Amino acid sequence: MRTRPKSPRQVTRRQGMHEHGTCAARPAPTGAFPHRMLLRQLRSGAACLGAGLAALLLAGAAAAFDLQGHRGARGHAPENTLAAFRTALAMGVHTLELDVHVTRDGEVVVTHDPRLNAAFTRDASGRWIDEPGPAIIQSTLAELQRHDVGRARPGSRYLQQWPEQRSSDGERLPTLSALFDEVARRGAGAVRFNIETKLNPTTPELTPEAEPFAKAVLDVVRKHGMATRVTIQSFDWRTLAVVQRLAPEIPTVALSAQQKFLDNIADGRWTAGQTLAAHDGSLPRMVKAAGAAIWSPFHGDLTEALLAEARALGLKVVPWTVNDPAVIERLLDWRVDGLISDYPDRVRVAMAKRGMALPPPLH
Image: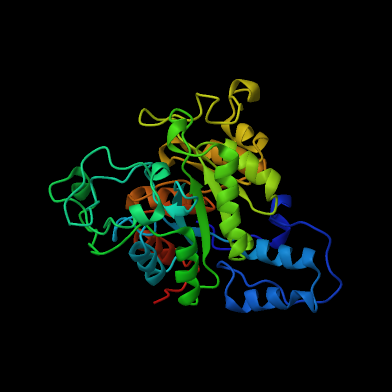
């Protein structure tokens, strides 16, 4: 795995290659995502640094390897809960990866499924809910937060899949605002957020349209001043196009899978009309044409040749969801730009063996 971070010259135009200010500044720290010293430098930029140079420094620091905790740290705590994000912070990650939906009353909530998942949801009386659970878009935030999502259902396939997951009774679906507030309370000023908009063009009745969905997320991001610490990702690339138009300063991430369980590349409804045929069968070129700064393929779809092609196009490559230690080792050997994992601790072990800089644990 790469042991030297990229220089600021390698950042993409989307990440801030603007005109430089005139003040001299210390070089951005290397080997990890922006830490508190760098953020203090950027906050004082109005007094000394030009806005373009501040953006360049932030992007240069963000060019190092990116360890992302998937749904917080799903392997160890209930997914997409504040408990899972606290667990990921305590382990030490650069980025919290999460999913969002929009409620009937317009709240952006952190949850993967378009309905409450019966595999880990109990109602106000403590009874396990039946399938199908209430739809997020048809429920208010108050209605959803009457449910407890802190424990896997006994005997469920979900529990068998995540045997190391510790229960945290009393967890509610958090809002995106609540997550931002929690991270701020813990002083995690360098931690970033990779936010996935969970649209599905085959079930349009379960989410808002792409534009109002993206606007709802961007409103929360801007309200909390998080635009410099966020990426927006999706399998449904329509949202990415909206973000690129409304918030070009926020990098977008094109998720892809070409598997039996999901293939969002074969159907142009998922990819905002982009097709492999239009790009000579090249998925990296397709991602580049979609305007994304980062490509996040399913790890089983990635090859060294595709990685090299993406790099030549100026794309970063951050595979998902990588839990097997042998796969982690292989992808680090390939020098991917980051990994998304349910077990950030496993990735940290492999990083430490290579002498890579590790994000600090935050308790």
